[in-house]
Image (cartoon, rainbow, N blue to C red; front, side):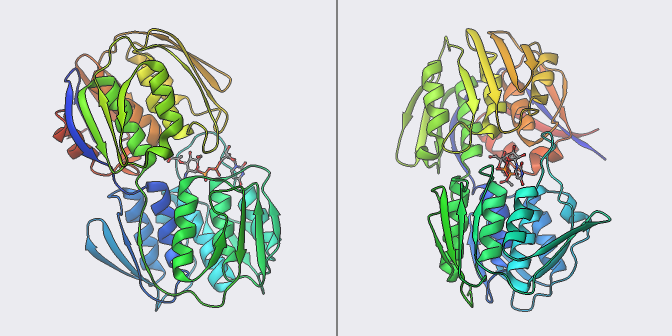
Length: 419
Ligand code: EPU
């Protein structure tokens, strides 16, 4: 039976929330762990459905997974077997594609189904494939399955036409055991890439330059187990910061690396949000008379596409015109149609949305069409008059750890019902 999230809006939130480990780092760190020959301990694991699906894939590969605590896993690939990944778990998330780079890197062969994930318009993986081919692999796609094989992987220079997060991480993982030096030019610079490089280096890899647009990987012969703590989730943090700006009396968001959120924080400051930025926390105070603003999404350190959806909701409450342009995913605007059902004044066209505010929002039935649209619906539900019912919440559960508990502790009225 399908569950829905219900939110009774209009309550001012107050208190503290602690941000979990980064989803988009975790979903790469778990596949990266299989490159080791011994146990890899990872702490700060968020409690999200994507992690459960990745663990299911680890089981299929005969990898032992010990859950020491909710946020603490030991992944032991000592007895792993490189079997075909054709189960449903692969199609439930996009990040299953990191097993391509990891298994190709370790065994020179991988066969797996097409990955799944949020539909944000077309999401090709041609750059991943070109990277594997440049390293010496042959890639075939037949009957919905990728078959990637290499007799030997050799380091080379790879220029990415687009600085793709996924392609950068996948190529890094495929190259750790390759002969010689691999150079990724126009690499993506997202903090999650640094986190994966840090794990690989702790295992004994030689990855340099992560966080810049040129990454070099010098191939090694062995990688061992290690201990790693995941960086805080900048998108979850940004979502709570937007929630605080929209409907909190005062909120402190803990376990944050504020530098990762510079683009969001400066936009919020421009809108008139009162904040105090600490070393590892952000405090937001109740702010009236917010002003509209313009946002254009860009690769890091630009404004994150994952945060434009929650921010759109705040824009509906700001005075004057706001504009959102998404250059990464021009079709990532489904949340706008849902917000319009709640009373927002939004016009969507060609990769951008114009918002005229402020408009009161009213609770109604809405759909989480993708993960961050779901986050936007939660923000909207918290400020709307009456009750908002959000369906397709499996998208939200794929990416937000203990969302209901965190919001309830802040004073929100949020609950789940079976439909
Ligand atoms: N692209 C290509 N070819 C490729 C790869 C990407 O054309 O082979 C294009 C994409 O279509 C997109 C752009 O390049 O227009 C950037 O895509 P990127 O590869 O960087 O995105 P991703 O790795 O698929 C990750 C996050 C997304 C986040 C984007 C952008 C994970 C698991 N996902 O996706 O997160 O939006 O980077 O920062 O890390 C989310 O968390 O809700 C989410 C969708």
